[in-house]
Image (cartoon, rainbow, N blue to C red; front, side, top):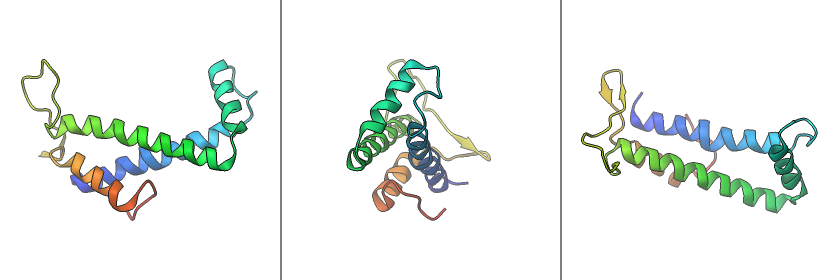
Length: 119
């Protein structure tokens, strides 16, 4: 696996599948959970019309993309912690595949949006 394939895998797992899972779970009965905050979230989501639900999904997509981009910036050394003395590396099969992960991930989002792309 190279950084391009890893970026596509992260996109599918977190940007596409995670948001779909949240949407599906938010459409469940509000009585199915003993978690008060989850029940309030499902009530809120179910009170939205379809356009509002789509807008909320877009917000979730942006939040996930921004979060992953922030993490990836530390792997390609464009971001550093204050007390970080050495570069972080993501090693796969004895090869550093983190160097271009942020660029590959953002390119995948730019080219194909939030939907599945050919894996």
